[in-house]
Length: 200
Length: 414
Image 1 (cartoon, rainbow over the protein chains, first blue to last red):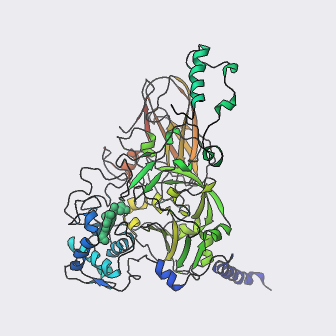
Image 2 (cartoon, chains in turn brown, green):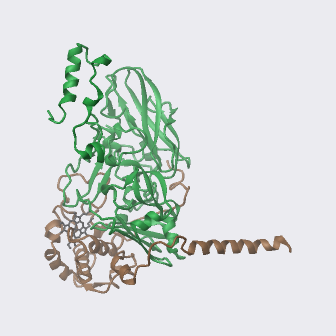
Image 3 (cartoon, rainbow over the protein chains, first blue to last red):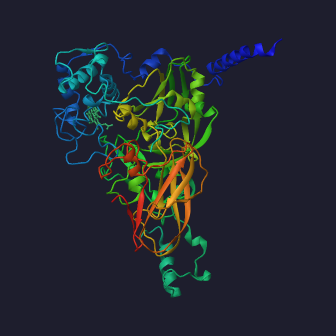
């Protein structure tokens, strides 16, 4: 047989078997989680909002929850001027008179430019963070309706949405954030390739 | 005086007085007490179970000045490694820098209860126990971790303050690629989201290419279990990336099809594509740890200039040292193996003439990228080189130490 003609076929087979190997388990350790276990743990929300749960909330409801759930105690009654980071624009620094912590200058500890609602390109990121991390010390206790309402409240207080706009899995990802286009995508990471050719 | 240790103190004072020797002079061998008198009357823990260093060794970590006491409230808190006392390339786990968003809070996790879940765009979602992870093929690698906030300021006096948010350990664990292949990554996947088990469940997005390349799911650090402050029982190591990616208390990896822009990610975004490109991965960086700020040379003569070099892009190829403020450079010797994304110790013989001088170091990594000076960085970004200039990305600029004729050493930025 003409070995030259055979070569492409071998190459193709080679690629297939390589993918095949990568796709079947080698060690057989670990077990499959149930769909319920994955649901219980999977709290990551894409900027597209595809994992957002059912539920709804408005800024009005959020304003009450902000007091009831203790947010105001740490972030200030109006979302500014207390010990925890400012959540609403127009206030004094979160830690008056103190420089932002090392490395966080110009970042989210700084008033106004650093307010999460003004700096985050996606409203979903606020939802995700409140849902996973707040209220501090009682994390993970908020129901989806409450997280929608609290997110709506912070968006409203920063003049991003109207007071009566309903936030849910459909509307939240569509909110146009002030800083939506204020960040540059990272260059694709590749082994052995400088991140910024020609620097310095 | 500590009643547990009367003999040692007694010996030290009495010995010198009895022999009538000048301070610093050697004792005659016979005047020294037998070794048994030195034994520590400590607890079983000190003597047998878990060793302690000499009480004459006092090198300790220090908090970043902005927040001098940890609290349970939950603001950012950083603790600095005493690089000025470091030798070799490994940071003792007890002196590893710590960065946390939760003050003094460290979760207590029972490794028997701990699980790692891999799911998302995979053919077979998997849950591993710690025992199962330890049965898988492992690797041991030396890698540094550095915080993006590791930035020298004019107010900083010591190398602990200017550079103490970098540390280096020998890490042991399973390659993340092994786990991802077990689960079978699907076409179209491009990122992973790594998440911790602590109460606030910190999460970061990592490019899939990096995840498959060299990321490690680690249970071992410097010959023992990962320390609680460092993420016990499981920490993701993303070699060469900023500290925030090195997810502590790792419990979940979700394979996804886009940058997820988590809270951790969002804190680091930048509008300038060039600045953005310098984020995530640490550039080539080096610093002289001796002589460094706050130390004092006792007089002209021979010294070994010693320091550390590292890069997020690979191994260190070359370190150069200048003793004349950058007019001339000499190649330093690499004193530890130059592992990829690892602290590498360098040294240079130096005869100090007793005159004021300026010491600098700069390194080149395996990609040929040179560590910039502040001036070079400002020029590249076309910004004025004044006190307000911030080197973009993780500040990897050259650190200057000024030696005065009295032997004292000061931060060249001041």
